[in-house]
Length: 165
Image (cartoon, rainbow, N blue to C red):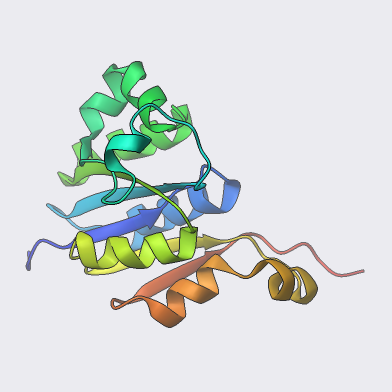
């Protein structure tokens, strides 16, 4: 076993972010690594903890608190997604990974890049929404922004592509 690594996973509870989590667990996470689930709330989100932590992001929230204390999730605007919690619980038990979550408020791409620096991440894994060219130009691509601007290696996990007619 080498140096314990810190791996961030961008999580918005979409199908592709869950796929990114599964990919990281199956292909990247090793025994003793730290997994940081990074959730970015929109700047206008109204959660009870936003006023306290809007500039710095929330404190690190241990997996145990996410699972056992539902009010913690509500205070930070997190979704208690059984599938995500099950994946995290299994990797915690099977590989001894330390799992925490952190919430930021603001632009998702910028805040994911901030998280890389704040949390001293060795790697970041994000899902791709698979926007078409027009939408990507109009809305921007979080994954493209992060790949371009993050100071650590970034893996973008694509969702299943539907066959073209």
